[in-house]
Amino acid sequence: MSSFSSEQLLTFATVLSEGTLDATARVLHITPSAVSQRLKALEQSAGRVLLQRSNPAQATEAGEVVLRLARQVAQLEADAGRELGLSLDGAQVAVPIVVNADSLAVWFLKALAQVPDELNLTFDLHRDDEQHSTSLLRSGTVMAAVTSTPEAVQGCRVESLGVMRYGAVARPSFVKRWFSEFPQGMDANVLNAAPAVDFDRKDTYQWAYVQALGKATGGVVPEGKGPRHYVPATQDFADAIRLGLGWGLIPEAQCAPDIARGRLTELFPDRPFDVPLYWQRWKTASPVLEALSDTVRAVSGQYLLRIR
Image: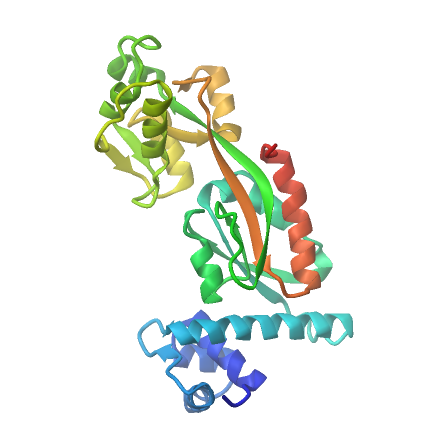
């Protein structure tokens, strides 16, 4: 394998960010033909196909390895330029991160707002379920992730952030309609028979809660999921529960005020649902990643429970 040039790596990463060769040409101020030539030279050096020429363009399995390299090289070059005082025209460094929707809504944006301004960063946020976010680390699409996976992805370091605690809640009128003997007589089967609200089809929390409840109370675990709504937006998900469409799990930080005001009823106050969260980032020594990690660590500590 021949060595890759920074120019080729930058072009490759930009194609995957922008989606097309024409868009890449506009961003890099070169012709589409020059983009194509750089990609061809890169693939010749790698000895394999790196890019699926779809719309948008996608990396092949081999291309994911090269994308990770391209992003790491770009980050190292940006860090070196900053330390040498060579940053030109206030150029900003984009940092791609994947984070789950609840963390975005509760605390993660607050962490990003505390990253030092002098680093001159922009953030390219990818939203994905915390159980699936590590795939974007493996592919090189992002350089850091909030995830529920404690095992470090190859080339990354991992640290515990704490536990996000959820409460199983519903609108009082929903409780009256579906759980006529509440709080007596509540078990996993009764809960599962009532409509639940899921974020999307990756969201397994409500179903996991039903199963855990059945096991913990010594009852029969339902064989299949009960009726459910799918509401794939954080605010709308919580609003669907507040409006009485179904029951669901809402982060304690978001539902506690509504419980206190009587707008929501906590179905099982002694049975919270805890999700451990971890911060995974590239091992690459980088002042940007260190500063970002510091703020993530500090702000998450204000909203997450520490694991003992």
